Length: 104
Image (cartoon, rainbow, N blue to C red; front, side):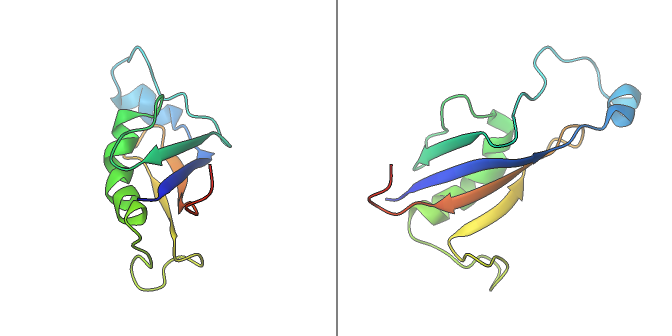
């Protein structure tokens, strides 16, 4: 099984929506652009957001098992996917890439 690299590419925050709709929460998203995580199979990387993992994990599993070319040519690199978490207040975009077997 291949390891899969997950890189935080973009973060956003919609204060107008937060103010209007969200109840205060103790630990809002703390992902930072450029942050990198490595997934080893179905195990969520340490420190990775649980909600984001729920959105990304099906794609991570496909890439970890050698799958590629999601949606018939969607990505320039067939062994990757650009995905986002499901937080409509603080969405985060992730680049998910299969790593070579000999990469750390």
